[in-house]
Structure formats: C-alpha cells, structure tokens
Picture 1 (spheres, rainbow, N blue to C red):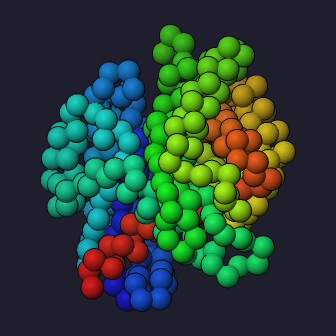
Picture 2 (picture 1 turned 30 degrees about the vertical axis):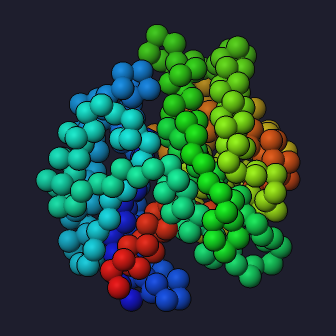
Picture 3 (picture 1 turned 120 degrees about the vertical axis):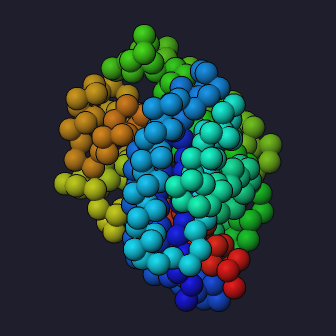
Length: 317
C-alpha cells in the first residue's frame, strides 16, 4: 500500500486525509481525516479577490496539516484547490503561501476534474451493495460550486456550476454585512431562481433524470443527514451511507430557512462554520432532488478527498 496525503481546499473548508491506499484493489485505510472551516472564499463573489484574513486562516490550517503529514510519513502529498481559488485575481498569493508551508503547489483544478475525483471517492464502495442501482448521480455541494456527475463504473458526463452554500448566502441572504435571520421570502425566491438556472446549465451536459441513485456529498448534505437522523453529536459512521427521503429534506430545509442563527447553532450536529450557510446548502440539495425526482439521497462521507488520495496513489506507482 502507498501512504499518501490528500488536501482539498474549497470555498468554505480545507480538509486533510492521510491514508494507505492499494490502487490495484481500491482499498483505502484511513489514518487521519480532519476538516477546518477557513472561509477562503469570503467575499470573492463580490470583490474577485481572496481576503487577507481568509488567506491567513487557510495558511494556519496548512501549517497544522504539514505537521500531521510529517508525523505520519506520507510518501506523496497532493493539494487540490477548487472554486474560490479558481476565481480569485490574487490566487498567486495563495499558491506561494501553500508552497512555502507544504512544499507542494496547489492544483487549481477544473470543475470537470473536481467532479471526476468526487465520483471516484463517492462510488467505489457502492458497487455491489443491496438496493443501490446504477447509474449514479453524484452531487458535491461545495461552498462556491456544485459538481454533478453521472456514471456507473466510469464517468459518462460531468458539469460544475456556480451554486454553493457560501456563494448563495453571500449573494442573496446577506444584508448590511449580516446574514438575514430568517430571510424574507423574496430572498429565498432569489436563491431558488439562481439554483434553477444553474440546474438548467447542468442539464445541458449531464442527463440528471437518467440516474437511478442520487449520492450526496460534502458538509451541507452530511449536516442535513445528521439532523434527519436526530444525532446527539456529529457521527461520521452513522451518517455514511444514510438514506434521507426528499420529504425529510424538504422539512429540514424549511426549518433551517425559518430559523435564527441561535436556533441553527443549537442543532447538535451543526459545525459552527456552517451555521450561516447551511440553509442555502440545504436548499440546493432539495432543489436537486425535486428537479431529478429522487425519492431519497444516499449520503457519503467519502468524496473528493478519497478520490484525490486514490488517484495520488495511482500516480505514485
């Protein structure tokens, strides 16, 4: 097995996975997995630049991750950066900081590459499971973008569109620099309109309605699942491969959109960094389910991070 470190730096969070991977069998033995909310995409939709405080939060997390990687002795490290750093005018400042700390240059990947990694990570364990039919539609709801990919063993079609929990919140649910609690109906309608337009774009490339199983990834989806399960605290094992019906997602989304910051923060499974953006993320998930006619979503804790690790081990052979 090959010991690798995979880092996924998105708009809202940065995550690390150190694992031993056997590319021939697809086996992955997790050694360390952690996530830090850094809000790298803070204000990018408005200013087009990465904010200094967002960069420092990200670099602080990178320094922590560098220590973990060194202690565990990963043979190869791969750092993948997604939506926020793709869009920012000052992304070279971000690149230089990462290289200085981790010794590797971040790969600012395309939306299609992002979707490929997500599909690999999410579906490797699903093959042969009872009541899980192909083809899959994998949706990775991030902070700045959402990736859609349809496939069975391999990818048939993929598309990334600019809807995510942070982008939708900052664009429509913020007034005078503060998230509206709860948002007015007109603001919610504006979020829905953006999501529906993005789904139209996705459908130009990805046959959303052909999938037999909807697989949902990332923090918005796993948080909704934790709420649906009524967990007293966040529990990755309980959430991984949980199934949540569209009716339950609709109920939870409505509750989140009508709640205050304090009420959302009091939810046991809620990460503090998701309190202000979870309502928009849940609405993205609900809209996808309604558009595709999915009766349920299969929730995966294995996602782009696992896909990055697998492909890194393949490249190291």
